[in-house]
Length: 577
View 1 (cartoon, rainbow, N blue to C red):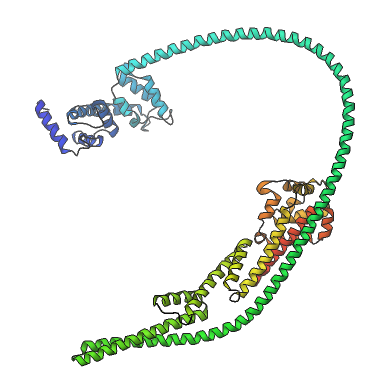
View 2: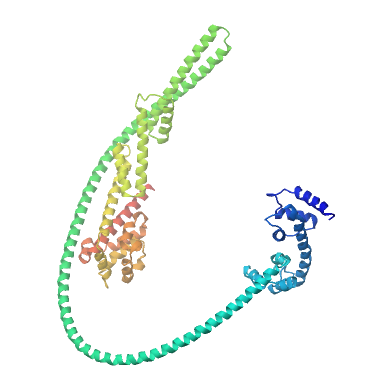
């Protein structure tokens, strides 16, 4: 490459012609440079290995370039030979060799400096150690010059490991001796223990004989105490039974009070319904009159709109006339005509907006109201006739009505009660009689369902346990539980076997009977299931069920209430269709 000065000059020129990264050439730049010198160049991994071998940092500085290129050349020519040798070993032309063949290549290239440890680390790093080895996996390691110090260090490490194994073997022998000594001592101790045990056995036999006598005395005393305890338990059970009967009587009285309150509420709801129906009839007649008035207002609005257009046209004509006017008198006359036309257009526009608001108020349509209110406010007109206030009230009425309809769809009692209160507070009952009739009916039904649910929730666990405790339940109890579980979603065939019913009643948590009753939504109960449950329950009446089981009677009342609700919803759906 010429003299040292020439070489430095060439290197300097080459180095400066490249875009430097932080003052040095990176691996990609070196790969491109070498590819220009040697056809095909070498892989990026080989370039990185060359940098690592020659350079002090992560890249190649100017004074390191010549040595790096020399190292890359060494790898380039070595690779030609290695690829040829690899192809000789790859007789199947699969672009891979066996791990043993790959090791053979390493041993041939590195000779005495071959590192078994590095070879093992290479095998362990592969996902499939026994699979074929490609040339790209080993080319960099094959070209790397082994470090003699590393090889010596590795041998020293192997010797250290051998000494460690020898030490461990000696420790194991020592441990074995100790174990044998301990076993001998244990054996002696065991013999001594057996001897003592025999002596203890004899003493135990003597003690047992004595205890038997004492046991007989204790047994006699125990029988007497047991008899006394049974008598006390009998007295307690009778007192408990009397208490339960009293609690059951109180519960029945409370149920009766609730039913009476429910009847009063139903009667009140019926009165409200009759009142709303009468108001609805009057409202319908008033609505007919309002629609007629709306037609008149609509005609007035159309006339105002036409007049506004005409006035606009006259104003435009006056502007044109002013432009064409030649004398001051003509211009003044044209200007007066323009102002008059614009004032007329403004008056007609205000008339149109006012009439549109009246039409919207009479029609009560939400979209018309919103557009009319927006236009009225935009025009900044005064609400002399009170139409704006009436329109805003109607908008609020629509919003309240929407909330009421949503609450009826959700069937949540608190939300429905809140929505009904909002309607009454706003004084909108007259405007939406049909919705209020439906809402009041639904509220009465939901209150009844809630009461029935609460009666189930208030059942004592002992009452539920009583239902489960039957080994052969009365027919009424079994049939009521079949109907109950039918409504909760269990097929009838699952509950015909009383043991399966017992298992269902015994469940807790989300699958618990009380929890499922609380979460049961009549809307989601299939009509066929409700019809079948009704057919089952029609065999009995409440008194006959209550005579055999107070708990079953509570489930009977709840099931009847759910069935009635399902039938009500079905009729409602059919009417809507």
